[in-house]
Image 1 (spheres, rainbow, N blue to C red):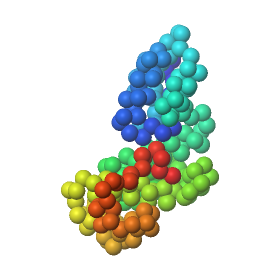
Image 2: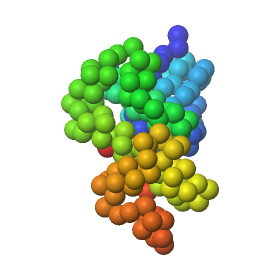
Image 3: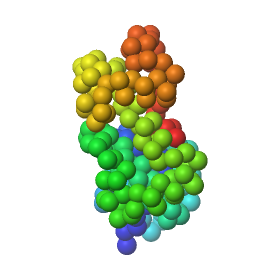
Image 4: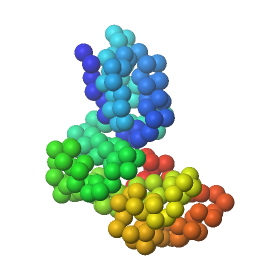
Length: 185
């Protein structure tokens, strides 16, 4: 019988490939895999302990707790929405998708992560801004519009508050400082 595994820190396509490799190496038949979630059937000789240890060695963790599982689903959905450039009313939209209230998710997020959901969302958006700056395809006003900021000056203030530098200064850096998505907290 297939089991559903929620995996912490599985936030990108490279993560999917790494997790899939571990599951198949450990004798699981994976029926579906997506960010943060794997549905797989173990073989007769499969040991979940080995699976957990191998995933842990790569920086992943099988989530056993319902609250942590919900938190990981929330993070994955927020990341997906930002990559889809669908950032208007982000937390409200994701709360609706998860069948929870924004207030409940916000309290849960603060409890388990130690920062507010709003601050986490802002940090995700700022990392997306850094990506756009590095790609060099959009000007600052276009980036602000793409990520649903009210104005480019609002984005500029938020960027400076989070990073400690202006977007222009960041653009001119010789080495860009970006955080991995699973390290944004």
